[in-house]
Length: 116
Image (tube, rainbow, N blue to C red):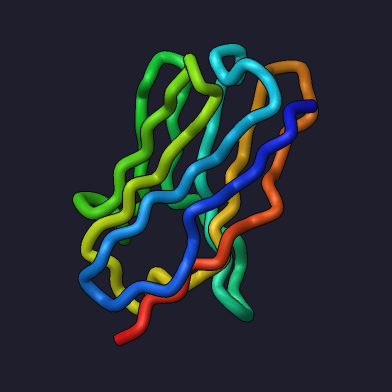
């Protein structure tokens, strides 16, 4: 099971930008599916963005056009570029990785707070 460590969270004003990083302990090129989820207080954990080995991406409707997910296989890191942040983007953001035939992995989460 790969270990995931997120970083890059913090406090930002509405309209600002942040870039989250997810560093994996193994080769992410072997991971079929990587994603960012988020969970706000009192709410369920929801998918924000995902990327496959082939580079196909998918986004939640609420972040389309504002967020971008990317993967750097050479550095075993997945990124989430977040622009035009809104207060409703405030949540703990989690990195997720899945490889066919193995148990999925979750990171410990990183807090993103957007002030109005």
